[in-house]
Length: 164
Length: 201
Image (cartoon, rainbow over all chains, first blue to last red; front, top):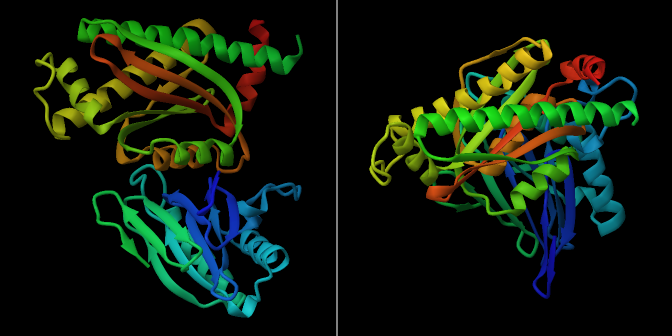
């Protein structure tokens, strides 16, 4: 993590989340994982959750698991952080969803599609609108989320970067 | 020495022997000194491992994924920056360095071949020195950012775990300034074989 007068640059690894406020920037890269961005324009706060799997029922049965690896427990965790630490109103949040690529064709099943399906269902259960969906394909995604504007710069290998 | 420490030492020993043999095999093929150095063996939180990869120079690489199936399943990943794969192709095909200028079928085959050599060296070490049978699957090639290959590799090897044992090596052909990365991660099914290794200590 770097910190400057322009805001913090927060990096998110797999199975983790980071949240911040304007003018912070949150970055990650995504293969089959799904990046779920929640943003509230008032105040300018948001977070990025990097899930590896759909539902926490896939975890070990002893209840000792990392919540941010899964869509169901991870989205709940992100909502809690945004509400309690950043003062976001859940009703003001909108979601942008990226990733879910089938990078390892021929080695694994298309877990990206499964992860996306789970993320969408969980967001719908919280009645959070999905305003951008950029998922699938066979190449990974590089994501940069600017909390000043809520815009997400997304680039895939071999393609021009686009703002969503 | 406690048991966990013993097992870690056993894995380090296997890794060192394997990597030394891989280094010798590749040096013979290219008729130049290839040096593969064991950088570190460590347990890492998967989040921290991938976060570091994203924060570093995250360039386009071509990687070979190899599945070592059998008594002690491991996943093996070897990757090189795309421009370095051109040099690898020239070395393996015995061309003048600089001949290959794009990621063509020759460059891809070179990475695939090298992945196979390295993974087979590991497999042979397990079989000859420790009587642990492993079968090497044909390398599957993937081109993407280095951090994405590492993420997919970790998910493939140990999706159910929050921490993984990582054997990380640097592969160098000193004469040509070529440097690459190599990872070996045991899968969850390897736990019983790690216990078995205690019999050798």
